[in-house]
Amino acid sequence: MLATHARTQQLNGTCAGSLDMELFLHYSLIPSLVIILVLSFLQRRAHHRQQDDTSSLLDSHFGIIIPLDFVGTFSNRWSYGIAFGATANKIMFLFSEGYQPLHAPQWAQAFVLLIGGFEVGLSHFPFFACLSSDLQLVSSVLGFSYSLIWFSVTILHIIECPHGQFVGQYEAVVFYWPSLLCLAFLLGRFLHMFVKSLRVHLGWDLQREEKPFLEVHQAEHVKQLLRKRPLQEEMKSWFQTKVYEWDPNFQFPSRMIGTTVLAFICLYLFIVIEFCVFKQVRDELDVFESKLESYVISTNQTGTLTPVILQLMELMNVSKVAWVVTILPASLTCVSYLFHILVCYRKHIKRLWAGDRRFLPAKFHSPSSSASVVAIARYSGWQIAYILWGYLILHVMQSLGTVVITYSLVLPIVHNQGLEMLRGLGLGILTIAIVIGLMVLQVCIATSFFLQPKMSRADKQKPLALNNRKAFHNFNYFLFFYNVLLGLGACLSRLLISCILGSWLVARIDRTILQNGYEGADMGFNAWIGMLYVDHYHTNPVLVTFCHILITVHRERKAHQALRIWYLSQSTGFRISARCRTRWLLLQTLINNPRLVMLRKSKPGHGPRDFSQILLTCSES
Image (cartoon, rainbow, N blue to C red; front, side, top):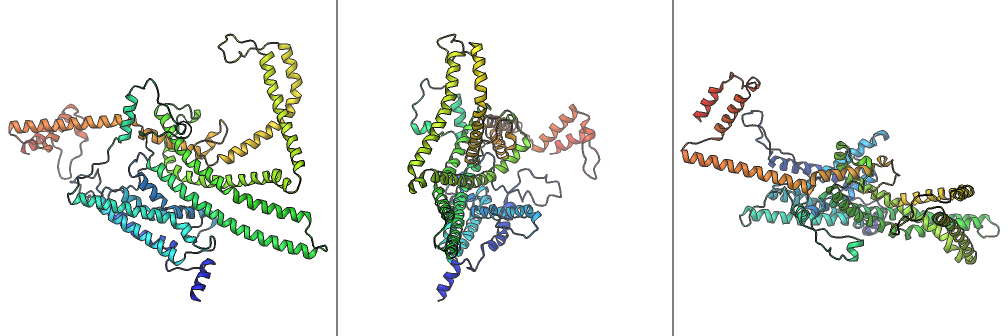
């Protein structure tokens, strides 16, 4: 009895487990802050204060923790992507505005969502911080512990409340299995990091090198540019020509991989939620149909349903079937968009590397620097939101199109009206064919009679030079009135095509759906362009290679200079300290620039020192 009662409560959505996931999210901020403070304390600042400054008491501790380098990170790409995937459930709650940590008036909902976003980000901050930290041994232990806590709590929630009121049986499994898979991957990743760092700590393996300034694929890309192109290009397969061609010298940054993984999981959760809502609506419609049918039969003397009621019930049945049928094509279309956006990113960024900006509108050839920096933070979130909204809009439009096709082609055959349907379809096709034929005929007449002959046989078309002007003017006059009527249909077709393409491409953030001259009003396209320019300026292989050469030459010069000074000190027998060398350079600078002496800041309690004091200090050292 108790088990049956508990299962009934779970199916009714009243299951109360020992741990609430939303409450656990609030309490998870405590270990998250502890991990951030530990990593920050162990992180050394690269540029810290001088030792003679008594206000510096932390000795270069408490450095800034970077969760993820959104610009130019190519290492641990899939680990970062899986870490983003672990946040999918919370992001869907934010998207539906179902998670609000505070209760506030309606006008303050934007601030409430902002606080909720910060809380979700802070609770998942340790995943990224432990992956990006240089302290591999400590960060792997902390990351594994934190991931294990989330994994255990999620498993406990699924075991205690596996069913729900939306999906029914195993609802928690349906909603939480992507997060569980991501958390399991992170557990394995942190365990692998711990083993590698422990072997290095015990001296069994060599210390891993620092993060290279120039990535291998960037260097290979520059080498490929310097090579001569082969006289005969290799034959490409159909897949390479039509679908995708793999480039070994190009890698997508971690931001793009993480955005794609998170968009896949969020799209899956959105489809599941939509299907659950559809089941509820379908059940309500079934109840409404039964009540309506019983009411009409009770009030009607003949006991039969009227044609209006039958048509209404038929419309509801067709709509329900159309909605279910179009789930698969709408979802596949959005999935193909995710892959196509990656292809467009590679194509656009490589064009920018080559200096080709012709694919962009003229106003985007020199975008605002501040807007481009903000676009890096906006793009990932906006891309996911565009995919979700694009799926919903595309699903609605495909459902409407399916209903129209059903009423135009399927139902007439079901109701034994196939001949009338074919007659009307034939008349419609004939009318459209005649209109298109007349438009093509105008082009043919203009080509044959109203253009002068070709100037050369090699020309592809006749020159834009009028011939038979009198006949041309009469031709235009009599077709003027017909083209007015034809323009009405052309206007409606323009509106219809704009609606279809707009709804079909609303999820494509890599292209604008607005007409030429109004691209600036498309905020998603602006974020895409700004993100491209930031990646172009910071990850251009040619520019990065040039900076790498400058840094390498500078280090070699410093090493050569230090080696020469050491050799001189060894040969003369005198010890030349770094402090003495610095003071000698200071003296040389002050001699060449006497006005700088007045600008020097002296220590408290000491008067200004002249050049002899500087030399005396140098000689004493």
